[in-house]
Image (cartoon, rainbow, N blue to C red; front, side):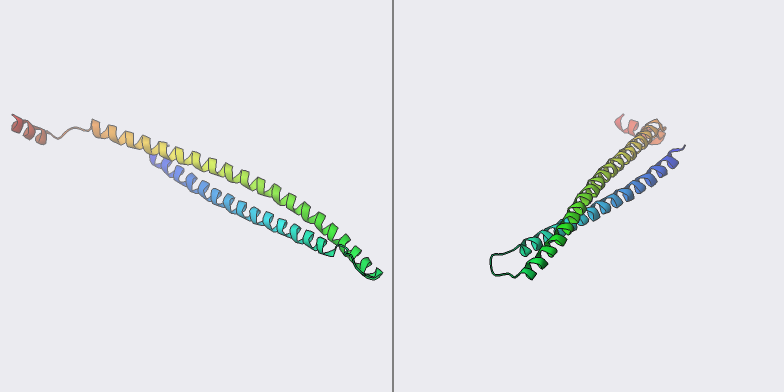
Length: 146
């Protein structure tokens, strides 16, 4: 494969890896938002459960029965919210791992591009060093120096 084709291929790979990194970061941000939302839901449900707790005072039996039913429903909702928080946390961990892998891949491709540029620069330097020197400027400088 020629140098030009190799450089083009590396540029395309770098662009793809950059897009993959951007997608991984976006997925991580979405997972973090979902995790925060699940935690907020869990906290709201727990606060409602505390508000429904029986208080000292003259409550009649019907109110206590309704409060017990409501607390039971809130308990089930709280358990589901806890499960959602756990699942969102797992998804967030996976998204963070994917972002890390994408960063490593992108960095590796950047290093390959840098190496290819270094090789091209070295080849250009060698070509300039190996190029024949113009005779007339050399002759003029020898005549002046004498």
